Length: 132
Ligand SMILES: CC(C)(COP(=O)(O)OP(=O)(O)OC[C@H]1O[C@@H](n2cnc3c(N)ncnc32)[C@H](O)[C@@H]1OP(=O)(O)O)[C@@H](O)C(=O)NCCC(=O)NCCS
Image (tube, rainbow, N blue to C red):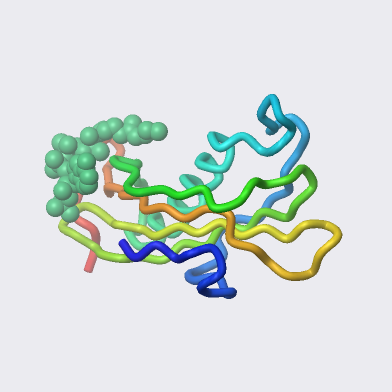
């Protein structure tokens, strides 16, 4: 996967699938947002796109390379962008970027990027082919 450097590209890639606000309850002991919370937002944002592609239920099977580029402060607008990298027989590889807008600033900053793999499953949790 081609990882973007911190300042290489100033624009988000993919579809905006999730937007939320970073809250004090989501901080680590040092006052910045906990990385696990960010990964949850990424997983949710990616699943929203993967469900569209799979036209139904999906589950996360793997998380590929992840990079945390900058800390996220409390009170930032957190936007998750997802794009499909590849569709296999049952799997959907998805690139996920998280961008923030700090309350005081207008420009957006990329804070994380990672690759999540989803698998299309049926009501019984068994794999099913992704529709063409
Ligand atoms: C996802 C799950 C249904 C896959 O079942 P499985 O019997 O391992 O299925 P397969 O081996 O046929 O793999 C399914 C697809 O996932 C891909 N895959 C499996 N493991 C992978 C990995 N580590 N990395 C990337 N892709 C992977 C396979 O290549 C295959 O893709 P393809 O059909 O497009 O070629 C099963 O592993 C499962 O239920 N896992 C738990 C999922 C879960 O609870 N997720 C939530 C955690 S928060």
